[in-house]
Length: 265
Image (cartoon, rainbow, N blue to C red; front, side):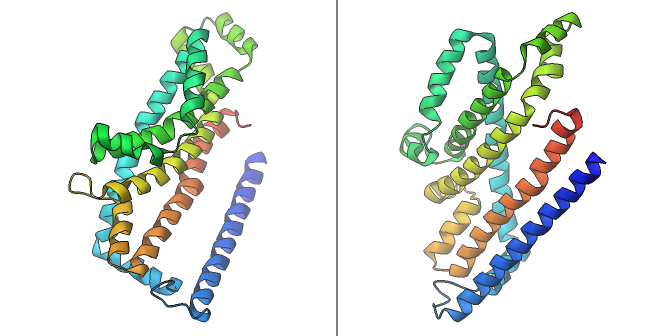
């Protein structure tokens, strides 16, 4: 019954989201057509969707989008690995925990775009520079979430694990990881949003890295050539990808982990 209720609630939430999106699309279309603003400055949604479909069919956008998603997947993987190392290091050593907390407090508020001049000096304007910006955007919020998750695990659960004679590796996989996963997913949501924004900004600044460019480079090119429809198409695609990741990827991750384990908050 609980799963049925969750399924119905999830469907109701998706239906409400679709209605809101359709309403906003209608507002966009009507505003562009009735406001008297030049389509060069504010094109109607129908024209933007036509451009989006044309570029997708021509293969221009899929290649750009695929490049961006590959780069962000690499950056997310490195950021998650680094956050796990920092989180578990702080768990094992109180002295290291204080140092890590201080570093996170200094670096977490620092936007990735502010590091661009330093990153350009250190790594140039290629793929490595973009990865550094993404890792910075993911590492600190995820470290904060993992650290908070580890600290919220009750001490008596560690006592139980010792009673069952679990070795350290078994304790990590059977106790700590399931216990911190709700916090990890929250941190991944924040890190994903920050890294997605950082990726677009970095691509627009760096241009085509290594002869290739992603969705940010696509938007930059459209702006240079005053292709407003293409510019809005790129922005719309960014929003669509964000909605799809939130609606399907993270919800699926929750279903196969924290809901299955019964550790949802």
